[in-house]
Length: 479
Image (cartoon, rainbow, N blue to C red; front, side, top):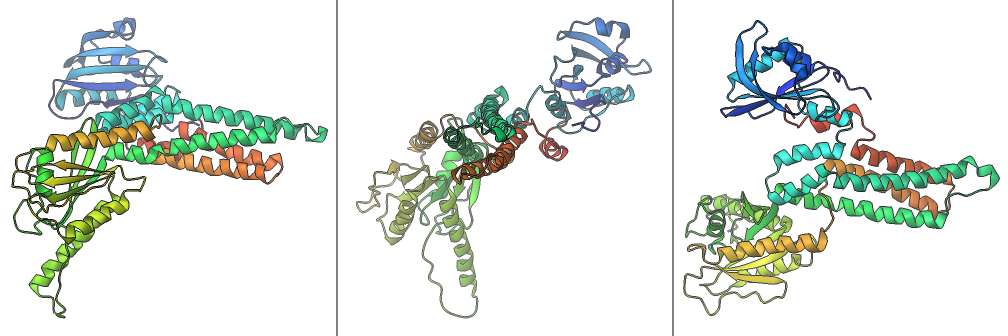
């Protein structure tokens, strides 16, 4: 497929704008060497420079005025990032120098690159596949070391190799089916139906396992959702402030101070967590008066906050249930505890931690105790930070257990990749059903070709302008 503008020579600043010691400019295309050569004081010597070596040179404007002293590296095709002739220029940082160089490059025959155009050309020239290309944008956006390691494995090609293996096995199966169709009049069957059924069942399981990486990938990228819940005044907001190491949430002895969910991100043990402080959950006694008095209005607002607290707890990956160890347990503690236990069997919940807070105060003999084998209890004082390190370690351990038990060998899958895999699995199951119903090989082959097409779309063996445009629109300019 021909991409519009693919034969243009493009240039862009590849480093963030603003003040800095060095700025990078990338040039790629058939006129890359010629365009940069026009700005060199010794133009004839440019093509004699050894590839992939750095040289300190002066750049001039087209009319001979000094631009900047720069370091440049020449990459002849196909041994470059894009597979084309590429020049990388490293000039002094700031805004003026790199932009003046870019302006002169455009005057010398280049055009400004579009977002992601360098990587798009790398895909077009088979230097990267689509999964590897997407991983570059994900590496740039990574906020946690664990997520970064995951997408780096994509750049290395681990995920692509699995998809390619699937596709090759399907191509082989489809070829045998279609060979049988070519010799149908001779009553020769090249694909044993029982063996083919077993093969498709195995491939179905492989695709399903790849799909399981979507939810984990979202958690790794966006952060594991951690809901801090409990009744009012047990120290939920203080606990969140202690974890963040700064006062993010207003703390007050007045019950109901927190009226809405408050979210912040924190990194622990290489993992990203989304801490969600919630409004205290309690029963509200509203009078039956038809008029909306100020007090009733406040209760109505608090009720909205409580509903959001329940929603946050229902959607959380981890629930942190906080109680006050200095006060006797009451009905509200038990109701919240029962709600936590109701979620305990759910596979999407990583764990529930019971925090007995305010250990800096004398402990009440009637304080709430959560005696359940699936619940870990930790004693803390949000005021003095006692036990906070134990809580942090417990959170990291929950993620580590999840990674060890359920996600070994599972790759992060983004939304586009998930949709391709879901379409591939649906077509594969249609082929399995056709085999079970003893339909002719024609029907099975049609479905298998659809599976092969979807897997080809996933890695970029089959691509359209719309798909490429959507992927690279979110890239940086210069990448």
